[in-house]
Length: 327
Image (cartoon, rainbow, N blue to C red; front, top):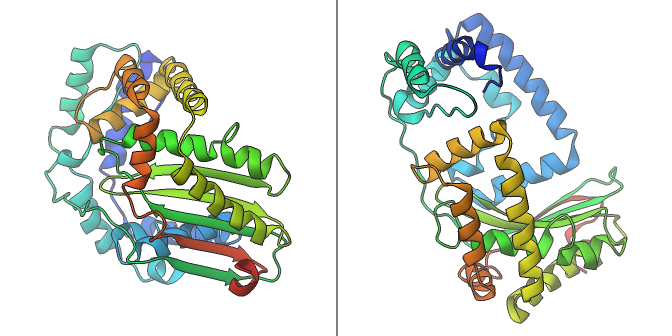
């Protein structure tokens, strides 16, 4: 993407179109492979990052979402430039790209620029598997590293995709359960000093989604914190949602929506996202209306629809063994 003054719009579109159609020279490719290998090494040195990536691999298994975006040093070093060129020809095609522009520009002029720089782009085979996925059963993936002073825990389970009618209800559920401030996990775990972090969120993707709860605590507190994660989830399912906490979650989302709409940069990303998921622009007013329509019953239904208790994937990293953590 580019964020420029209006006078540089022509040059920005030219540069972006050039980036979408690179030479993919073999010398550049070999250099970049080593850069990515170094990125993988840095990522593996970050405990939470490596735990999150392993959770995705464990949860999704052989599904494409289970493939690590960074890859492995072996897969990167064994890749040939022709493989990259073939992937590029399939994915970076006119039928798989959206040009999103927000700000002070002339519509006819931006159309002219797009035709000038992109009209010769080929059509590619951009189809992909977007079927809903759930793990076949609950899985515990416990990695022991005695050198670490903290225990990282991520609990993932099935949830909505981006086009699900319950998308807004499920995201409000994630906010009520584990938003950064004022949520149940915030008050009952983080605010009590039991963990350095404790949160929950819904990640809706194309075709599938996950609800995940995470906490990062000392090894001494980790078994208790893990039990609390389960307890708060069970209470959420069994007791339901209170109107005041639903109101707070709605207010947060609506406030963020309104404030972000004042930024052309945010509007550009929102426009692109809307076209990918819905094929049209969703106005701020419509977004607010969708949020406001959600009831407490909708929130609980959006979570209970899925086998939350039967298909939980627990991924942890730290000094505790499975027996010690689940004691």
